[in-house]
Length: 217
Image 1 (cartoon, rainbow, N blue to C red):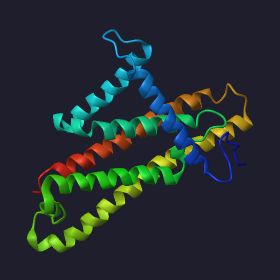
Image 2 (image 1 turned 90 degrees about the vertical axis):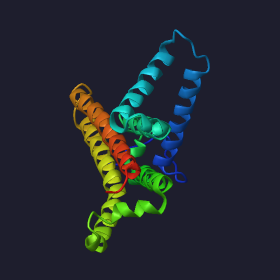
Image 3 (image 1 turned 30 degrees about the horizontal axis):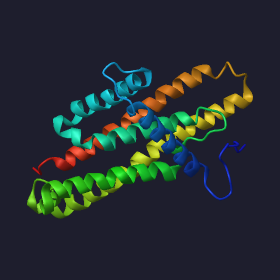
Image 4 (image 1 turned 90 degrees about the horizontal axis):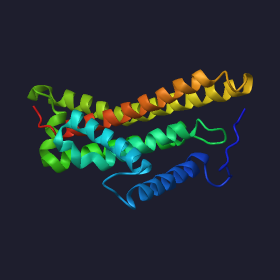
């Protein structure tokens, strides 16, 4: 049974419509949280500071102080992915991340950012990371590394898509077959999955970028 979405229309795919809606929500939240910054923050400012502080702590733990310059990318990815996941928990709404096109676009952003950072940091020496430690194995290692790097956006996109799409389908089936109170434990589990999948995505993004910054050995 195909679910009915509030923003569904024949001209704009549902995942695109909800992506624009989520972008608008994030812009409004950012505006409301920063329009009157105070030393003693209100509820919204305090809530946003906790979230931003969490991303900052995660960046420092994984990448060190040098990771601060990637904070806008990582925090934006994290907020967008988690809220996208969460959107599908409400009847009539669709998770943008339950569509492979959205998750592939996010994965390609990480993939391109990784190699832009590598080239910017090392120049043409960045290619040494694809050659391996032994010169006579360089042709074989180059092919292996290329395949490994190309598989990254595929694994990132399908992991996120599969978990969110599968969870949304389970929730829809349960809501159809059983009373409203029965799916509550499933909802709690889904919230945990939403958080875990967000953390997995941003952690892998940070690791890929940090790896591109390292010197080849």
